Amino acid sequence: MGIVAANPRGDRYGQGDTPRRCPLPAADSTGPTDARSRKLNATSYVVLGMLTYGPATSYQLKQRVAGTIGNFWAFAHSQLYDEPARLVATGLVSQSVEQGGRRKRTYSITDDGRKALADWLAEPTLELTEVRDTGLLKLFFGTHGAPEDIRQLARDRYESHRARADGYGRQRAEVEARADRWQMKTLELGIRYERTVEQFWKDFLDELDRDPP
Amino acid sequence: MGIVAANPRGDRYGQGDTPRRCPLPAADSTGPTDARSRKLNATSYVVLGMLTYGPATSYQLKQRVAGTIGNFWAFAHSQLYDEPARLVATGLVSQSVEQGGRRKRTYSITDDGRKALADWLAEPTLELTEVRDTGLLKLFFGTHGAPEDIRQLARDRYESHRARADGYGRQRAEVEARADRWQMKTLELGIRYERTVEQFWKDFLDELDRDPP
DNA sequence: CGAATCATGTAATGGGTTACATGATTCA
DNA sequence: TGAATCATGTAACCCATTACATGATTCG
Picture 1 (cartoon, rainbow over the protein chains, first blue to last red):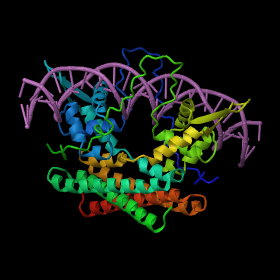
Picture 2 (cartoon, rainbow over the protein chains, first blue to last red; picture 1 turned 180 degrees about the horizontal axis):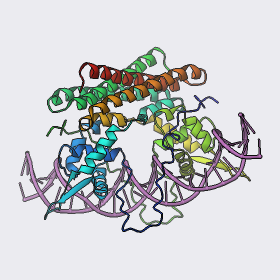
Picture 3 (cartoon, rainbow over the protein chains, first blue to last red; picture 1 turned 30 degrees about the vertical axis):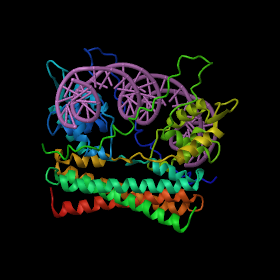
Picture 4 (tube, rainbow over the protein chains, first blue to last red; picture 1 turned 90 degrees about the vertical axis):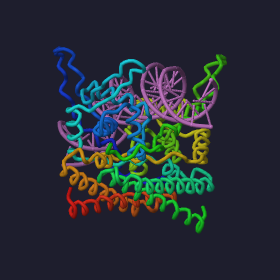
């Protein structure tokens, strides 16, 4: 059939499939049965985590995310408006609304929020890493395009990863004082990752020269 | 403020912000003004690409994805039911419905579909790679948890990436005959990536032993 | 003082995840 | 022949993206 594998394992579908159902609310009606429980996702923890450095508006959250985890895990800024609002509803974050003007909202993490963050950090981490790289997808389907497309792809990707690796390198120097030990480590992984991928595309380009498609 | 950077650049928000607006349909009414144009996304191209290996049901698509790109870019299986249906509406895929029984649908790529795939392959690839790794997030916020959490995290992640790298290595041998050149290359990048990350966590574990938190 | 950019949001839509369902096939 | 697993789908909800909007501030 000309395709790599029909081998089992390798889907995500089994991953989160354990039916961890909540016991139904059973038609009771003790008040609003408040939505104070809600499954948190990565975005939630990013917001909670960033708020541990102090209260912030959505814009400030955006700034904190940019230049740190925003480098490898990006959001639309609207998420940093939506998610804190959800967390307020859940009681993990509180807000204070500025009087007058734009009624700007400033968010703070609550004790429940700190607890939720700590619980998450203590959980085992089983999820598989996902690498969302359009270039990889294109490489996989490379036979269905023109030979020159592949070469162009390789050049683009090489440049892109090299630029990012250089950027991280510069950032490391700038940031050394402010960042804590673990934050520096994430940056180090970022650099190692980008250099690896950069090297891959470089080797690939060389191979294309030696052995053109 | 104790946080890494408030440096500019590093958000995605500027990325896709060029207002590439379609000229409004201008209230004409030449028939259904069919929704035959639609911005395709990565899922679309995965489906189109997989269909170039021959017609398939959603389940067969799922199998083709698992063990190849599903390794690094996973979907819920329901997407492989939804997306082909959308592509049929766009005319890039055709379907034949089995008579009787479950009325199983088999999808094929159309000429327009092949064209769309080829166009995509010819486009420059500017998107930045996103690495969605919960472990990295936890590492970044490590100070807010217990010291033992970090160590556990490192052990978990080390194991996980080692297992995946081993898996890829085995897969490479099995698959060598069936896979084409570019497909093998994606596997090679996968291996390099996993080995790099495995090594990172290993070094980190060693460092934690030498210099405990 | 006007233009650009910063800062702060909202609305609409589409898409992805989760859960629910159930027929078909295999195999102990 | 019953249990397990394969195969096939649907529905609801949540979340993410995209576009729209506009007040505030800076700066030439």
